[in-house]
Length: 383
Image (cartoon, rainbow, N blue to C red):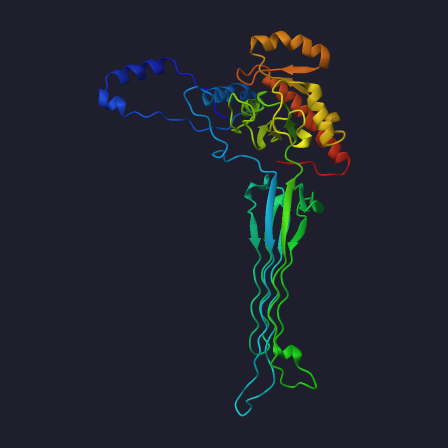
């Protein structure tokens, strides 16, 4: 959030002072940028719109998708390996005047597991690495000393993460602190003390530790935000997310600028936070993994694609937002759209018109969601 600051008489004084500088001194001046500051929700429709305008100036190169640090990752392929078990040893007890006192080789320690743990503080899979190796157990020692087992390796993932192996769902981490053992550590090897028997009083056999389990898992985040913006490409979803939050998704005049979901946080009074996701543009045939199509808004097509993806998804609480109302042709078509759909929030992410109406409606929907979750005995999603 960047608040707007206006200058009147002080600006004139500053310009008069700069005019007295030498040309070389004026050339050494460099533009500075104000750091974002936290503001109240009432300032969102003013400050954030001004910030979005400065980001979209023609002379400034738009941010590329690779340079954006706050992109939201909802899929991750992970290779996990459990820790290897420590090897057992073969040795014999010896002391003065008793050279062969019997076998005393200890067992190796077990390898550590790789464990996925659901953590409410983690919001995205972007921090999850592509592979994890568990800690190995220590080898056994003399005097029947067992090796230390490898420590458990915990990988924090967001609450609502689905764990898949191939096409099978093996875990659903939907509760805070819920854990799943992704890869088992290998068992430790046996020392020669383990093989002591009545018919074998001096065994020399020992076994190495077993390797840890190796698996390829696919992590999928099923709950990304409280609300999602669904629309066709180039409908202004990223611009709207910039206007109501501090998120900075790439904005350009061509379709499919957003390649990955972005999440912005809308702050309300009373420390209430609502997470809004900017979802990549949906087109006709999106449920069949098609990536190109129409670029104009057709609400029936959007409902069709949502219903094909998941039955009942189009019937969830929602509101239709008509963006780019600052354009003359859009304002002319607004009455026809309202007659067909009923309630429509007409706004402009660029000028800030009617943004506060959307924020208030979003707050009402969020409160209804929280009350419904508490009545069911479930914990509502918190950011």
